[in-house]
Length: 171
Image (tube, rainbow, N blue to C red; front, side, top):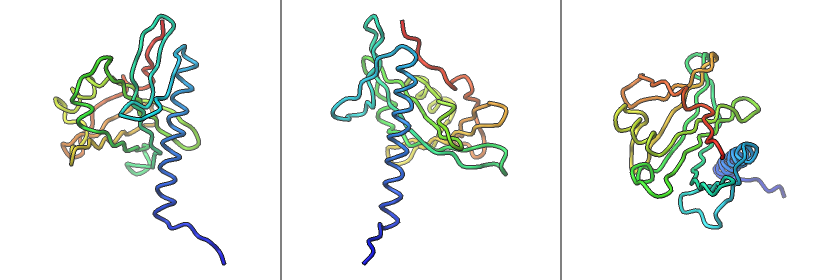
């Protein structure tokens, strides 16, 4: 008698694998850039704490997504879901977001921004869609290297290229 896994469980497992592998890719990049990353034993909103050689500590929230073709094949789209309360509440040290995107067969185009940058982009420029305590964020990766963030104003998009691969500098 064959044992089959229900499709909904396979989908959940895939999401967990994508999330964890995006975290590992991010931690690897941070390590190579001179930071000492650590994962908290209990996840209460921080996926990693990173420390440089002189004691600078950053809290990091890592979100991962696989991309799909969009806009008639002219770009790739990745969707992220973030907690609104986390974006709206400042803490010390403050939070940094890494949005890791898998394009084709590799992790690439890491979008990195502070909690305050993300809050401003949402509050002042309409980036993302808020619903039931979550912010849904669509990123579009164009073949020319441009990164655009979808806004709640229909098809409008905001240029986020400045956040692409904006890794924190270790001392």
